[in-house]
Image 1 (spheres, rainbow, N blue to C red):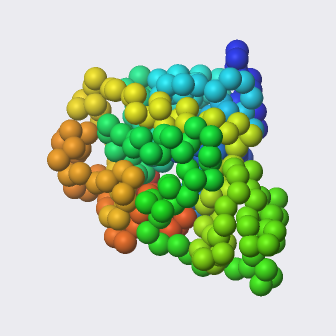
Image 2: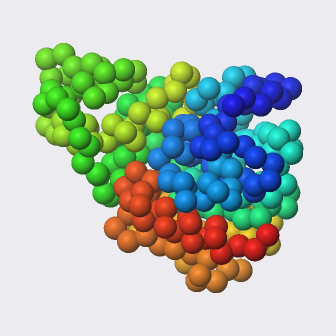
Length: 291
């Protein structure tokens, strides 16, 4: 589905059909990612009561128009989409940068619930990652998965030859892997690269600058009302090195322990590492609200 705005034709992936009689769950992906992240989140048990949509922010996925350089601009666009679709009861699920967008949405409009996955505030981005993201997305995605992934699920590959599973993404020649991001020698651990492919492919965007733009937006974001926000739930990964859980964070001080879930032995990407456990947590959070 596409929603035409003044400067963007915004793509939303419909997990199920949009119905005005249902409340709406909007999934907002993290930096450099798109609606394919949402497709890794299983909310099928909620389809009878909720419409579930995953948004492509400008410069990501199938959304046209110039990219946005601030979290505030991204949240304004999401609010415009929600208004255009005449959505009243809105639940936001935001991952990492998408969580910052969710925070900003919650500070601007009244929504039913905002679930923040692996979102720190402030969300500081290291200089090394910023440097990698400027032009070498292969190195950037390697950095994100090296420090962000704790559990790597095994991927079934129908062929013993690495590269065939991701034929549109990788090409192997004499032990060297060519990807849209550059060239990399992965002869030391090709199995790891194969198993990470379902996650890494989501960083593959048509504009290689987009991850850098997103990460800079995360670093710059400040919300002066962060300690006054209501209706938030939090999901963290115990082993997440990119957005570490800090129980003393100012964002958490007005919330109870029931509002915060720390997933054991999980990194920055719970929908990739522990999708079944994540689905249970999201179902519990969403089912607990009274609209």
